[in-house]
Image 1 (cartoon, rainbow, N blue to C red):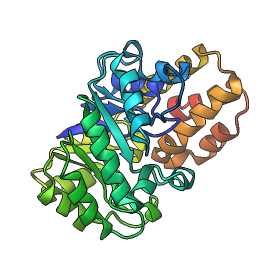
Image 2 (image 1 turned 180 degrees about the horizontal axis):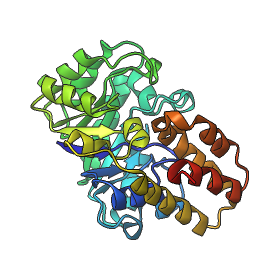
Image 3 (image 1 turned 60 degrees about the vertical axis):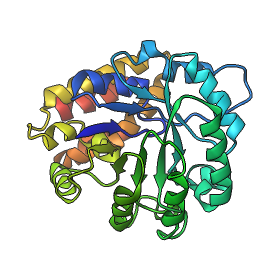
Length: 308
């Protein structure tokens, strides 16, 4: 099985990816949080930091683009080619109301004819490989039949399917009958994404879809960074490894001189997922969430991870 790290805005940054890559089973592909086309001549300093090969050594990194304007998408691809990228990913999966209101992400799925024209333009307009991460529709799962027929007209590098509609957000169960349709009818390789939270989930999926050899992990890997290792029959990471992983992220964010408040905000975002693995430590997790200064934060983390 090939494993991919899903892009989560504000969390799976270059800092997080480097620490993950150093301390856990390396992912076969990493995806950046989405880039949105803009009119600037080059990429912004933040975008360059995110996609710079220097900041992503040893990783196969795929920049993700969120767009509904073909020229904007192609302009962004050209900027990425300058940094050596030969593959990009189109985000048709984000369910955020703000994104959807602009007709981007999974909001674009509500306009299949317009999406068809967009895909025709971008696949004609570049020699870079383009994969697609998609939901199965905006309102109803039946929309996917038409969407899949559209995707099948183009040379997708791969199709990453999160089998929920936009209005599901992350609630309700994945509509696996639609993933089955993708596996059976897609003309390109298919990757699964959605609700793999433990080794047993991965095992059940592999038994149900033995021909699918790609899996994108998001919330599950953020909650348990050793999830892929457990799916391969290894032991869950011990506290020492979690501690080393945490400390690398914490140190690198501090090195960015972004201010105490912003560093703590970043770390608390990570703990909002990672903390779910510490059911016995709710009191200490509460201290982490409430910490306003590094000393209080570090004290709570030490008590949680080191038992001090």
